Length: 316
Ligand SMILES: Nc1ncnc2c1ncn2[C@@H]1O[C@H](COP(=O)(O)OP(=O)(O)O)[C@@H](O)[C@H]1O
Image 1 (cartoon, rainbow, N blue to C red):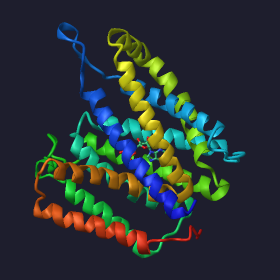
Image 2: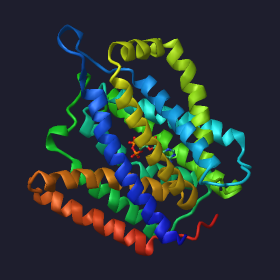
Image 3: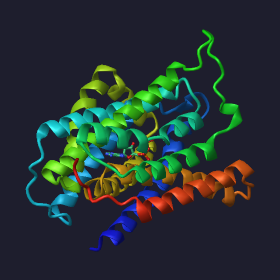
């Protein structure tokens, strides 16, 4: 398949699957199960991650056995073990951050993701990019943050007088972990030409190995079983979510393996922006002048990056 077509199909796949995934995720984590006295919310976040990783693993196994014939995998086990650890830590930090900062603040923070992916790729995976590429990526990230920023989000001084709270530290840590995950994936590509199905299979295998003991030790596994027992309908919501996530992750790994973690993070970050932009138009809301300018900057950055940001994947 031509590279451009593959890129377009993966990007559309990521957009569609994660759009649906977002709706299901909100229904599951914000919804109320049961009635009257039995009303309760689903709070087993770690168990949710565990279920997702198990389904992702099975999905990758099935794909490798049927459609994706990818041959032998020579990737160093250490790379899989390490990148799964950073990938799980990134998710844990960004979920934990929500206890201290609002959801929009967390999304704005995580919109900076291409920056650590780029910087750590250069520092740890010896990638190199032309100067203009930094500028285009910065334009996209700056535009998205400018678009989503709300004055009400202005960081209020904490009680101790500082402007940075624990929530912000967690978002920063999560971004660092995203950058490390990307850098290790850059190395896998450069040294082993790792394939998408193999990456998906192995990263989820290691994630299950890390999260499994954690949900047993924290008692979340028992909590999950209890919840399912009280509200069997949650099984469907969980499975639908996991299947949408697995399909989406397949496209993510095609993007990572074939084009690299940086283009992948630009696509996933743009997806968040397009979701917000789409809902503004869908609900007939108006854009503020600042948001119009931001939108132009994002589009210009994406356009310039796709036209002139190409690198021949060269090493320093
Ligand atoms: N480079 C990657 N390697 C493995 N999984 C990834 C990668 N990038 C994204 N993902 C998966 O896709 C999900 C969505 O990513 P994204 O849309 O960037 O949002 P966020 O990282 O803020 O959750 C992540 O939670 C993760 O499971």
